[in-house]
Amino acid sequence: GENVEQHPSTLSVQEGDSAVIKCTYSDSASNYFPWYKQELGKGPQLIIDIRSNVGEKKDQRIAVTLNKTAKHFSLHITETQPEDSAVYFCAAKPNDMRFGAGTRLTVKP
Amino acid sequence: DTAVSQTPKYLVTQMGNDKSIKCEQNLGHDTMYWYKQDSKKFLKIMFSYNNKELIINETVPNRFSPKSPDKAHLNLHINSLELGDSAVYFCASSRRTGGAYGYTFGSGTRLTVV
Picture 1 (cartoon, rainbow over the protein chains, first blue to last red):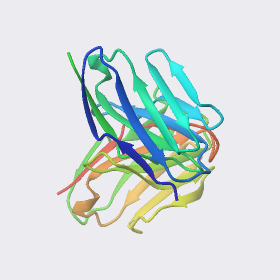
Picture 2: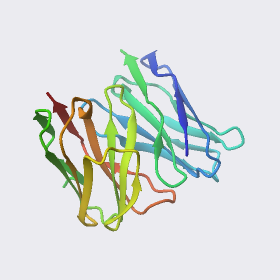
Picture 3: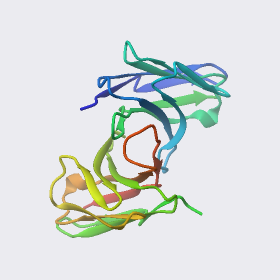
Picture 4: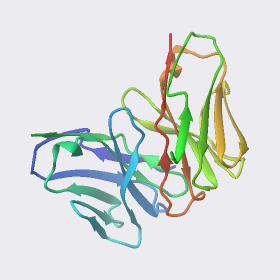
């Protein structure tokens, strides 16, 4: 089955800096790669996704890149703000969603 | 109006008891899921139902029994609760199984077994 690895497990940045979270997947049949943000006491919320026929996608301060050959995908957050502090999960979907272990992002004011 | 709602939000119970968690989605989605999130935040799929039919049943003890009376509801019943069952349980739904569709998660049920 699909195995998704996510790095780093924790990330601390200063407000205004950029944050990058990286994931790898194992199943070449995976064709959908969403990213979720989970705030304290809440369920994961979809923030951006990318399909396998696209290499990059941007939504304001958030961008995702996908390298299908290397089976890598990444989340980039620019101009970080304290409200970006949360746990971020990558996922890959051949049929059902398999999640990475999560990255706890802390943005220091 | 909440898209995926779970009840209760918190559940504290003693070992050996039986408990249920309810989930409802009003998105018109065909597929519903149960995920378990452990203390290290790892999200692991437990079950997947498509139009009331079981699609995925991961390696979950048979003390856990999902029930889907209709495609908008997926409940989770747990028998003979153990300390290791303590976790946050999330219900989720998606438009359909497979394909490039994201999941909508509920807000979770924190289960504590004492």
